[in-house]
Amino acid sequence: MSEEIITKKRVFSAIQPSGMLTLGNYLGALKNWKAMTEEFECIYAVADLHAITVRQEPSAFRKQLYNTCAVLLAIGLDPKDVTLFVQSHVAEHSQLSWLLSCYTQFGELSRMTQFKDKSAKHADNVNLGLFGYPTLMAADILLYQPDFVPVGADQKQHLELTRDVATRFNHIYGDVFKIPEPYIPKVGARVMSLQEPTAKMSKSDANVNAWVAILDKPEDIMRKFKKAVTDSENKICVGEGRDGINNLIGIYSAITGKTADEVAAEFENKGYGDFKTAVGEAVVEELRPVRESFDTFIADKKQLEDIYHEGAEKAEYYARRTVSKVMKKIGFVR
Ligand code: TYM
Image (cartoon, rainbow, N blue to C red; front, side, top):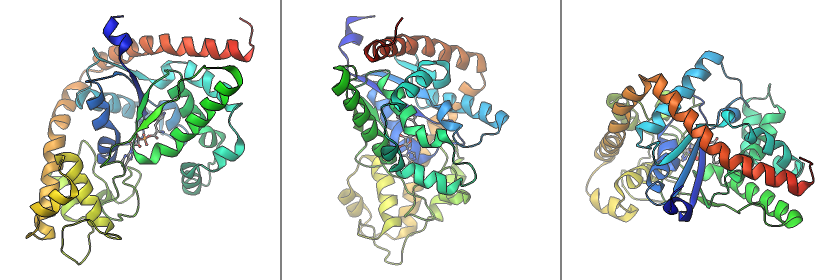
């Protein structure tokens, strides 16, 4: 390992391979995943173990795993610089999850808003995995001793729990875990539904016009933005309670790098129709190279498999080291 890699700060994050990835995933997390490779040592996982907390149809699940890996390469992650792997290929994730579950309180997990939301949505399948999901997520992160974890705002509470569990463990056994910092973008951290802008943009939304997939065709993206719900003020500026327009400004800012004030100035004498077209076009252009290179990556399954197998070997090196330290501290014999 080169001197340069050893001195770089480390980043870890993961994404579930459940359904199509959305513009929310892209702006909230994946854009930073790519940007952070310039400066940090980055380790990224496809969190397939997390995905089975809700029922997956086996063949669709397998297909989504390949699609997710291909999207990660299509956004520009280069396996020469980044460790990319599949969570279930590194057994230490499940192992550390069990160990940490004995240091996570029932009350803490009960307060997780994602658990409350998901258990309401899947009332017929409120399984133990759904409840313990944040402990698996804490294990994912802590195995790699990262400095930063790039995520969207919806994962902040899980990151706080991770920090609490790690701090508790360190308090008992000494400095075992590095306490990671969430890395949440200033804009784009919470992309909202285009149809119901008080709710998070989510791939599980039955209304396809509510969310934009990273791989959507340009004409579909344009249609969805043109249909986006706004209000009757016809004024392009951020305002309290103006959820629809605030969301569109946030998306446009996240892509162009312009501040909300600069966006307001740019569209001062324009109406919602022009603005929606501009946002749609910015999204189309941002995602165009991703969609185009996706086709090349998904066509070569063998290459995808080679990349994630090699990634798992590298990830395992860190994961084993952490689990062995944790077990020794707790008092397990070798
Ligand atoms: P997941 O798969 O739901 O989403 C992946 C990433 O996309 C972000 N995101 C959003 N950001 C902004 N606006 C949205 N509408 C939006 N929707 C999703 C998420 O915040 C996330 O960063 N539990 C995680 C996966 C995970 C993980 C981890 C993340 C498993 N282990 C360890 C970090 C570290 C999840 O379900 O993300």
